[in-house]
Structures are given as C-alpha cells and as structure tokens.
Length: 211
Ligand SMILES: C[S@@+](CC[C@H](N)C(=O)[O-])C[C@H]1O[C@@H](n2cnc3c(N)ncnc32)[C@H](O)[C@@H]1O
Image 1 (cartoon, protein in one colour):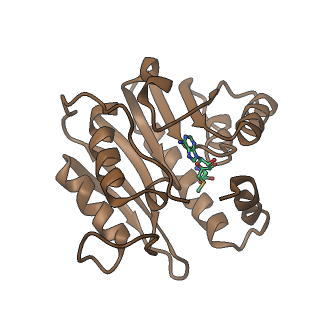
Image 2 (spheres, helix red, strand yellow):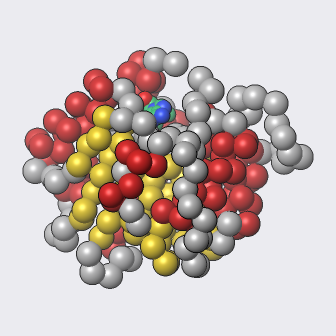
C-alpha cells in the first residue's frame, strides 16, 4: 500500500476520509479537554498527523504528545506541520507495532488508533485492543477507527467488523463514550474510556499491516 498516495484523498474535502478527519479532530479536542492536569498523548500510525497538529495548536494547555509513523516522508511532513504550527510534537519515525519505540512515553491519557484496526488481522486487532488497556492511565481515552469492510476472512459472526472492534474494547475493560456511523461512508469511529489499566505486559509486537 502506498500510504503517501492514500493521504491524497484528504485533498478532497468531501471524501469519506476528510469527513472522518473532521470527526477525529472534534473527538480529540474533547478527549484532551477532559484530562485534568498534565496531558500525555500518543498517536500510533499517525501518517502526517493532520488529525493532531491543528487540535494541539488550538489548545492553551501543554500536551506531551508523541506521534509514531513508519513512512519517513509522512513523518517528516508531520514534523514540519508541527513546527509550522508552533506545536511541540515528538514525531518518531519508527514501528508503532513495537512498543519499545514509545515505551518511554507510556502510560498516556489519550491514545489514537486511527486507520490502524482495519489494516491488521483480527488476531492482531485483539492484541492491539488488549495492549491499549496496558498503555493508558486509569480513565484514559482511546479514539479508534475501523471501516465496515473486511480485508481478510472474518473470524467472527459480526456483519460489520467495526461492531466487533467495539465489543473487543468492551471486553478489555473500556466503557464506550461515543460511536459514530456516518450517514454515508464506510468509516466508523469509536471513543472509549478505560476503567482500570491492565497489568499485562505489552507483547513484543502488536500487529502487522496486511496491506
Ligand atoms: C490508514 S493510514 C492512517 C494515517 C493517519 N492515522 C490518518 O488517519 O490520517 C495508516 C498509516 O500507518 C502507517 N503504518 C503502517 N504500518 C506502520 C507501523 N508498523 N508503524 C507505524 N506506522 C505504520 C502507514 O505508513 C500510514 O501512514
């Protein structure tokens, strides 16, 4: 998958991914506003971080923010966007599937999994959701997305794989705060709050992209 090419869909403000972006920014602003005191944010598979930088730029409070992106061109764009906006964002060009890439940043108050869960197997999805419960502080928030399309053979009976993800978060100790299904468009977005962090250590690898 050419992820730089994928980002070009953002050029069309009416595209599903642009509509999703607007929702992600809105939900991120709310999640950050809900954190008392110091805020720690981690965005995994952040792309060019266009869902994060403008939100941080509009905040009066300081956020300890980290974005992890494998593609060096996209990571550079994220770095430049943050610098242009005067935002402190630690952009790490690296593997978000390997928790050692950002172990020094954990735990966080807000975790972003945007455009991740639809690109990995169900087994990795389960492992990633379970890991989110080890990466967040008590009461921490995860913002996630998943399309309603299957990329590989389903391993469950759910007609919509996003519904399965929703239930996975519930099964791993999260209370749903919001769930968005657009009138048109394949994406779904969930916001969930962790009751109690998991004591399980993080696995060596969380996921492998299947495309
Ligand atoms: C669907 S895009 C989503 C980008 C961004 N979160 C957004 O919604 O605009 C998936 C991103 O994950 C990145 N990616 C894929 N595998 C990765 C990995 N192992 N570690 C970090 N980033 C990865 C890709 O380069 C791509 O930018």
